[in-house]
Image (cartoon, rainbow, N blue to C red; front, side, top):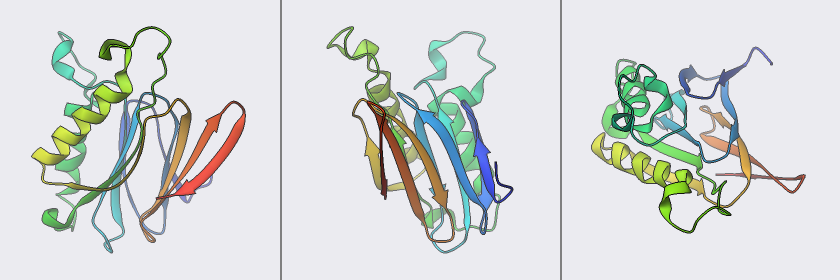
Length: 165
């Protein structure tokens, strides 16, 4: 991995400042959530797996869950030289990876993750300015805090598609 790119693992978050970029791989039903202040060059990216930490007893894995990971990342970001009222978000992922099992929402973790992200971002008063959600393909995202662009690489049936939001 290049030294100018910060890599966020599964069930993790990291902060980054330009000129570095930040990336996460393998977003299936997981969500990649970027919170940043436009023009500051400071951002955070989370790779969250599950919507709600309260569903698990004795949970010590805060970064795995939308509610705790996003809150922790937000709390760390607002300690940086940013204006919290200017923070915005871009999100990607939330694919329906198990659609063959059931039409009910139980197996649609991607949709549950998306709703949980919308809820916690609203609580933190962070507006979503772009999203690439759903579908059935895995995604890799790269965010550039300098240009505020998020490159999305989707893999579907061995075909790679790229676009920027």
